[in-house]
Amino acid sequence: MTYHRATLGLALASLLAAAQDPGQRAALDAVEKLAPRFREISRQIWEQPEVGWQEKQSSALLRAELEKHGFRIRSFEGMPTAFAAEWGEGRPVIGILGEYDALPGLSQEDVPERRPRVQGAPGHGCGHNLFGAASALAAVAVKERMLALGLKGTVRFYGTPAEEGGGGKIFLIRAGAFRDADVVLAWHPGDFNAADDNPYLANISARIRFRGTPAHAAGAPEAGRSALDALELTAHAVNLMREHVPQETRMHYIVTSGGAAANIVPESAEMSIIVRHPDLAELARIWERVKKCAEAGALATETKVEIEITSSYANFKRNPPLRDLLDRSLRLAGGVRYTDAERAFIEKIRATLAGREMPPLERAAEVLPPKTSLSSVSTDVGDVSWVVPVGHFTAATMPPGVPLHTWQSTACAGTEIGRKGMMVAARALTLATLELLASPDLVKQARAAFEEAMRGQTYRSLLPEDRRPGQTGH
Ligand SMILES: [Zn+2]
Ligand SMILES: [Zn+2]
Image (cartoon, rainbow, N blue to C red; front, side, top):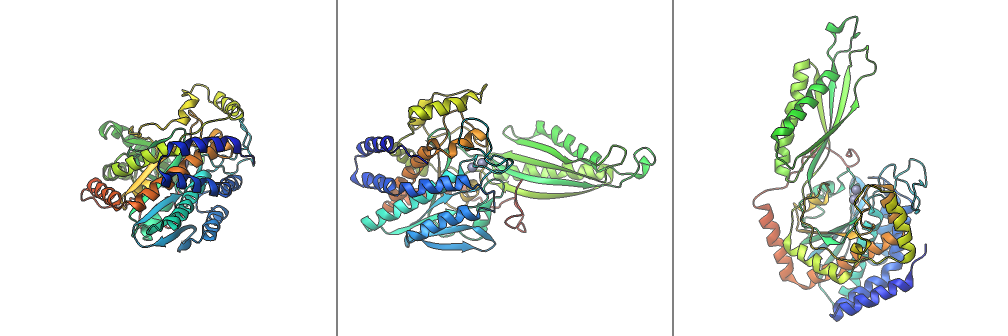
């Protein structure tokens, strides 16, 4: 690993000059002093990618480091790779979320061409190696400043496993992990810097299985009841329904099993379906209709249907005071500037994405206005925002134009390009958390905005109560 210390020094010098307030300067300084170890950890997690619920080494690395800095560790039953680490006493309790799970099949070297480290193995295509390390770094930097300033309150890092389909945070909510938190901050790797002000999409993933009666398809078709027929009818009903659901709805499915041979009436068939909508309550209503499509398919074909919900995320409840806090913190945290060597690497990476619109590289150096456009993805941070005020932002860990969940983003997450974005996130989180700890008024405003966004709604995940950690995923 080589770090461009000279460049970093220069970037920090200009940031320190921009931060007029001596407190902010000291906070940025604390982040920089602690950075080397956390940058190393981000690379170690990247080198040993672990998928959801199996992040043993990744969570242990972060946990050990936080423990070393005097944080108290809380474990959660049934979730060995989840933990909370806190420092300080009493209110306010400010939480910072960290993730560290990888994606299957995205193993990749830190080179600008497709080259798996281990064929078929997982890789950090969503940059969660940077996500966890930046958040933990911020938590420790905040602790250092709390000590120096005698600030009251608690800073708490949440080690949240299995974001990619596993819904780790839903189980942490059910375990009461956020019950006493006043505000929670989170970020996500991306190809720009901006506070988030969009609702993301609530989603639900399920497996719909049909069971029929097998028979010889030519010899005794009248004796058979086809599970595949039921599946086809269900799919047809869902496709007709597209015209009569709210505009922002997304419904997509695949057939995961459709029989064994054309001359056997299929005894079993299975489809995997995902439905999304910007509002959890509306999604619940659409889902009831999808269930009717499946029941109708089974009824018409005299087969049986079983629906297994494997994952469901809530939409994100926006919080304007926290959005503004993160916007101004990001502006003090600065953007990302690439060296000539990094630019050469980036140009090679971007050349592999022909056909995509490529924004100018300089965009990574800027902080964009809060992002209000509807995002087409889902995250279990959304669920947390239904139980506690949450502020969320994106930091440029990938060059503009590089999408998440690709080998290209995996490569960047292992290099200095990714670590520069990680530092932007760590600085912004540190500044924002310290401001919250020092300003009871701001915490109150965030709470009021949360109450307003909830307006009498209560949080109820569509994930059935009897689901256990480890049973979830697409
Ligand atoms: Zn992802
Ligand atoms: Zn992610």
